[in-house]
Image 1 (cartoon, rainbow over the protein chains, first blue to last red):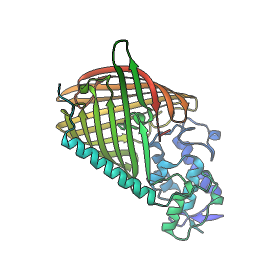
Image 2: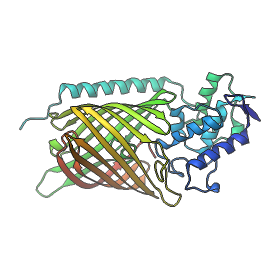
Image 3: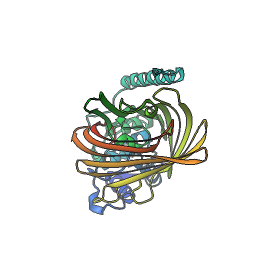
Image 4: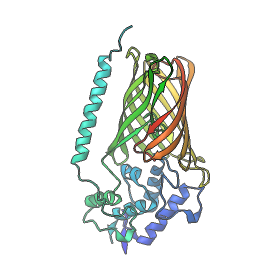
Length: 93
Length: 288
């Protein structure tokens, strides 16, 4: 299954998932590779405070070419939520 | 002894906030709730296609089931994320031959979106109770707009503060900035084993004079236990003054805590020296 980002690049669901997890991992340098999964909770497991989730907006715009809304990002609870949000913003290929 | 009498400005500010909160609450209730039927952590393959860009953006937000138009938060104070995380506390103290004393530290805040990259907060807070002399009590109302400009977050707001007599009143415009991250523990836990995080804010308050300030909050979490400290330093008429408050809490059930909290220093609006320590029940709604 593929979708297109805002620049028309094609992404598979697995590709989006990997890219998002890579971004989250880069923003949580104290956490190992295996710790971060779709079920990882941003606030409870990674300890992100109220504002830290906003750090995903810029790298997702650069890497996955999708513009996210801050209010939605602030309400996300898990890595899986973030993956679903990015995927649902993409267009059907 | 003169009875405390709210000043017209205070009444107007509080009434305006109450009206605004009611209006936004009504608007939030009227909006279609997000789709909560879908699992929050649904894999991308399970996501439904959306017909056009606008609908797709709406569906994308709804897919999370976690993007309410307005969110109500209750905590110790709205002065920072840490202060909101610190439970609101209510303490009742009884000494032999003395009247029953109460101590209340609480804030409520409403948060909602302004635009894709900006949002609004409105709040009320109170540091009161009969155990505090009226001069040490403080009541406040504020409205604050945030803008995300990664790598920083900026906030511009307006806050009204008054002492218990509503004699000392301090309306002021504020501007604050914080780095979203970039240092160990800034905004996120240091490591899976060390649940410690902190956040600094640099700000300036413009009311009866210009007052720059620096605020930092730090917190630790371990199972049911939480501890936190928030400290603020102001430059008032060329003199540095500071205020620090901290807490140690144990989660009892849900948002209910047993909390030991203390504070010391000089806090606005009076900047008179004060300090207290107490143990009481805490309540928190919203932040994790």
